[in-house]
Length: 404
Image (cartoon, rainbow, N blue to C red):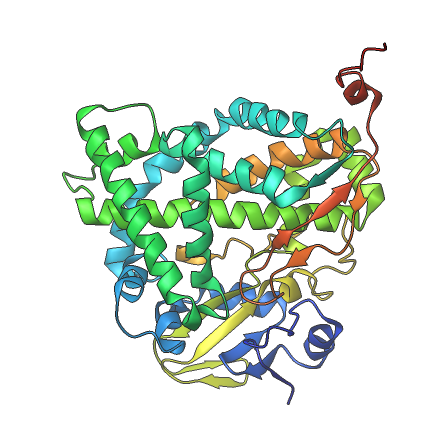
């Protein structure tokens, strides 16, 4: 049987090797359990209550058994299960109501335009540092009610915490724990402020959230807010880079998005189907499980490969990238009781940004290879230079030199 080394930085979860394995069978063996490759099996296992979220063991699998990072990781929504998970999630949900997030669309649009204004007349951009990172970080600041000029520090902490999902996490613990210490201290100050000076923001909503008299403790609030800040910033930044990468490989789709901005929401779904930043979603068996001929022992790990499932021809007869098509739901935000709590924030801010980028960066193309994380684990761009045609409307904004 085919075997994948998911920890190999050269391994690519979107490769022809993975597609060929999917044609042969619905799963393969890996160094981290079994990898599930087909859409139907991924959909079923993500919702199978005989499994729990498998990320709780991630630090231990990488030799990290104690310390600030290990302790914090066990208390995040990713690791909690059962009544503990249901309680925390229930208390966090008021801050993520669709109506609340939808009302922020004009602010997201203004921010996207402000950032594009800074480079549109040049005809080139380093996309990560000039758009994706400040956009994602400043949106987190808007959501949490933080001063937007703090985004540089929030982004640095979030970026360092992003190493938590790295296949090299075992070597990143000092960096991760330094960021945890900084962000936890910052968040604690914000929570204390909102208790005496409430505002119309996510932190105040969570400080005041109650369910039959139950509230989040100070510690639970700190753990949750740090996780929300880093997960929301890092995944949005990475997914924006992957979205633009995908669209630029299909210039007809880039032009279509510019002409039809109403396709922004659908573009987000298509990108996450074929090029998700979360390249696999983990589950752990709570008991011995027999599933379609595979025996998974209690404690066994299964990795749901998002791209492989999203491009499975048995679920999508024509899996080619097309933002005008309606597809079965992708698994980029997980599924079941651990479906991503902040999915509507990510969907909304990307659906706002992508059509504006397409309209204001016509005929865009990569300006060199850039620098990318491994296409395994959580992936994305570290540096992504792009060149594009400068529209006349942008050129008109460039100050003219005086003669003489």
